[in-house]
Image 1: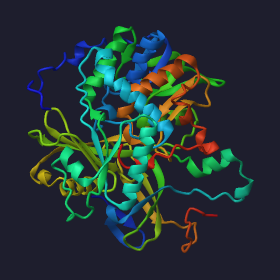
Image 2: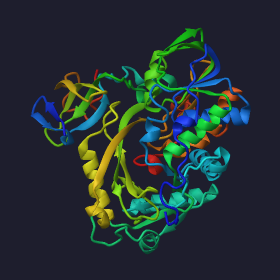
Image 3: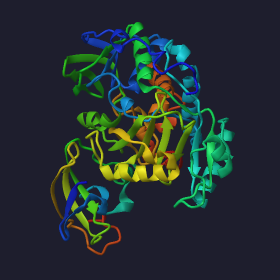
Image 4: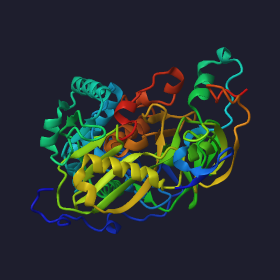
Length: 98
Length: 411
């Protein structure tokens, strides 16, 4: 099992974490201004690279905080992990970064 | 599996002799990208149903060495929604005549599938799905735990397990087939019709003119094309990224494994979405088991051990007799998952590029059905009615085909 380094708890087993998909997706500044096409793109369309991918992970069974990771989707090796800095820590919807 | 014929007696010719190994021609009317089950079936039906034979199937590795070699070969059509039931039932009907159509043994064995229910909500959803299946003319029935035990005596239907079996849906016409033979059978017929199957030929890029792709760039040179038909499963995003076309596909590892060869103990197929395992026993005697996908995106054709561990725990609880079986090997395929667990088939923003993807964890059972319908789509340049509901634009219109109940964990 691979270890993932939580920025707050240190290296922990992969099973303590939950995957959150692509990182750095900004919630639309003015959602009601989007047309259906733009809304669909925000809601459903994500990058799916073969290689380096910036992702969100949540340390579910630990500090329960979100982190940002850069991982290679071919080898599954984590290049780096760090605090998910851009969203409010107590937000119920962490993807709504400004 | 109760046949008196020893395993291997009906083995077909070695695959080397089943198709040619041609050099790519400079141009084809149709270039199919992906030499797995879907690509080969599409090629076969293009020739057989539409007389289109100036076709190349490009495979970056070896023929049917991707997900076609890595799935658990389950075939069923008991999906909830009309759109899914239609395509999967069409496929199942083709499976029922496929051995004759291909003139090739595929060891198709209709041994039935039990989809176990472990909670009250499972029971309600399952009964609903049975009724929906019947309205669509699909064989389905609801069984209580005692009846489950009659069909598959090795399932633990007692009350003293973590998630007791409260019943199951049963589709008697469901079955398994020998995946390699299916691929070889399609390849052989396509080759006989004059279609070029070109292995070790990776598509690296496309040459675009306006809204058309004129040439496919490959590791074996440029190939001009009339229509491009993508059947690349987990690598579809990689190809479409080259064209700047975004899709909601996410590629995940999906693991499966087999035990050593055992005496026949398991007469049917058992699936359990709630405890994440599905099991059948292959013709030679190995238990074939699959799990849910690994949680993260991955192209590595391997997955995490804890996923297998969980899957084995579920299997041993449901089938105490498996406790002494040995795991022989495990592997992973790369499955392309969509937000509604239904495929994406049809047009792209490029006029002559058609896509067949997003079958996620359940593409094998669809092989003849989608080959048939996708070939029709390619031949006529418009979506066949069976695939029309699965167009990419459903994510904009909101007309999703939400099959998470029947497909989400385990196809």
